[in-house]
Image (cartoon, rainbow, N blue to C red; front, side, top):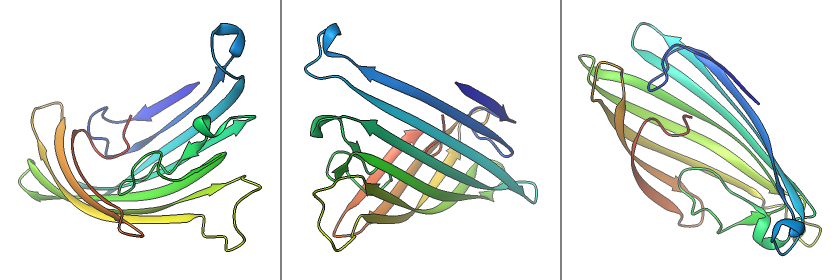
Length: 172
């Protein structure tokens, strides 16, 4: 299920997006085990002045009867997907985008936190929160406001990443 209401597909300045889906893995269809993974995601764009935006993002992934290979992972820039696992993951992040030169070049700062939970065998120190933050630059490459973006992100415990992509960080 998907709800779209944003002003631009490539570089939204206002609006929102909600998407939810379930992936059913079934051993009857050739898999090794049967389990479900439900994913829900929400994006909200708040314009500031005429050329700046605060983009908010929330996402959750919840599994039912999943083996470790089907567990959820930290889905936040600055972390390697699959490095930290648990049955369930919930995350929130914010991305502030500021145009700095004409209508072509912009800068962004972002930060968020992901939580992994649902594993009965986890240790008791409750260190299942994974914060991340970073900054980047983007360039508007055409009249439809498609961007190419480069980000550097930090996580905890020496995690970091450099990302180059078309589009903004978490945008669908």
